[in-house]
Image (tube, rainbow, N blue to C red; front, top):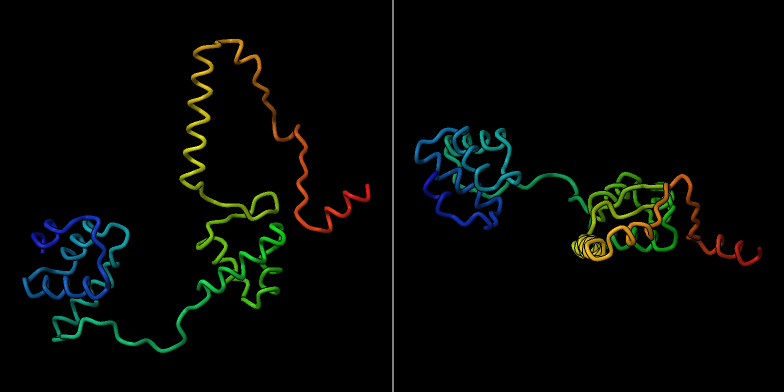
Length: 192
């Protein structure tokens, strides 16, 4: 088993069938479950199956199982995080980022937990200041921050203290900003 895994490229993706087949070959070669699991973790990292799953497959292969496909499972497949539901949540959020999971759930006819799962796991958003905002920075945002920092450093190297004197800093508790998110809020501002 170690020879098979060491010679495979680390970036290669393995399907469940591939993993089950590797377990089958390893059992035939006489390896135990913990050794097989260790090898799988070496190659697949956090995508490796748990030790319990490896033990289950080692036992099944040892008892003579030939078919490496998963057995069909009863019940309905999970569809909460499908593309259609993700787009429903996105449309709902585009109207008002301050909506709660419950409001989005009512609007989209999805369960509240499904809405929350889509927001946090699929859209990588988190609730901050009562708005759903991206949880992770995109590569473009990270690059932009690096470019700003390099620009500031370059200007400081040429302008020294003159540059520092022109920087305005503030604490979020002292700065007031209001960004209307809904049509109702905008109409209130127009009346004032």
